[in-house]
Image (cartoon, rainbow, N blue to C red):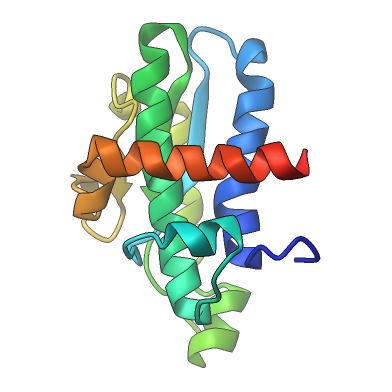
Length: 170
């Protein structure tokens, strides 16, 4: 971006965080935030998240998705019962999106697979009480994300880095 951020961190991590923060007061008690995560998750380079280091495309993508999963869990814990349900969902690997077609040169799977799980996450009873969890649609169940997502200290560092970026830009 013109501000020095990797576009994947800007779009996949920072923008959703800012949007949810701005909308928190508008959610109904049974509201839900469904964040689009990925099975591709990698340890977050905090300097890259802040725009101070460059990463390759796939590394930036995987790190941005882990960062999203980390802040989703942290925000859900911080809000507890007073906030909306917040869940991170891997809609399915290598679905037939433009990114998959261009990045991997394959047609990919049926996009309806991802649409179905995101609709269920937004509306179905099976997600009641799942705030802060990660749903892996490749496995068809709630699962453990990358180990860093379960490390509260690392997750807090990611949230601080996001807030540092937002303090600089907003």
